[in-house]
Image: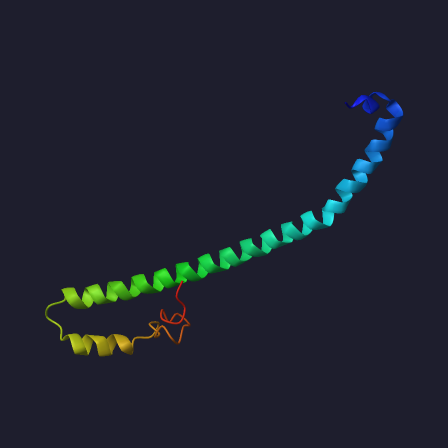
Length: 103
């Protein structure tokens, strides 16, 4: 069936043809590689945003747990005090509004 491959001249002709065919696929491979790198960058960015959201929600949960477990404090006064505490910005100011940025 492949008797023509027994001829050394045929093999020497097929080698450059194979190289030309493979080189035709090189741009497609490079484009696919760039697409994968861009997707990796987007995935890393999304993971960073999710980690930031989780950290923000954990902080809020700790504050709420503290409010609930402290029996001696007036809850409304505690909420107002925390609302004016520096470093605890509302979610919308930080771009972390859970309703707008759902996963």
